[in-house]
Image (cartoon, rainbow, N blue to C red; front, top):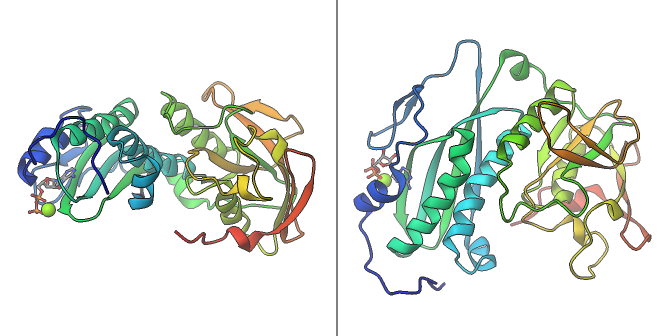
Length: 307
Ligand code: ADP
Ligand code: MG
């Protein structure tokens, strides 16, 4: 592991790290009763609502992918957790951060925390606590969101003939450089829920997201057209385009979705989405690849993708 800060700098202590880089007052939320600085965070959940909690972890593999770039890792840590809240159809509210670093360097911490807050602030998400430890790099953001009573009671179902969709238009899906569209993604997640669809985040790749959705039914399969995705940057093995990590999109199913290849989720979300195919009862993934070749892959190949 190496550090990319251009200038050598002094290591900062844990207390100073928290005070300087993570204890920020923005955005102010009056539902945070106790936040950073207290032994435990305490938040107020509105009456009749449920709390949704989703962790997202970055490890040394993510460190290596980004060459230790603090800004990219900070953005991704927060965006991955927020994307999972979007998939749950939740309203984002709070986050905690568990951060393990081999060494605490001010320039890296500044880049990391600025990027983290740049994702959280437009969503009005407050960082309410965390833990800072020494060791090989790991960062876990736990996102906390709120679901209304209706959302909390209905479990999203996937059925044969549902449309399979992915957020973002062709040529568009990439959140590696997080766009200022967190709000739209949240609105899309809530819209999917209202439309009785089921959603999963694609942080581990489209294949695992789709497999997770299909696993909620018995022997469900899918027929999807991968030529509707943006072109793969380099030629890849069959199915590999389904495994690419990094794209933070929502993969989702919708009943009665019609046939349009690209649609937008209406007024409440300007997010566009691409229809990739349909849920089947075949138990396998039939994929038309970008070169027109059709390949059949077992759904379980993507289930419980190993780290
Ligand atoms: P403790 O001794 O209880 O572990 P810490 O010194 O680790 O306390 O933390 C002090 C306060 O700072 C706590 O409120 C904790 O939630 C918060 N905190 C620690 N690390 C982080 C972090 N990386 N991001 C946000 N809050 C943090
Ligand atoms: Mg601690």
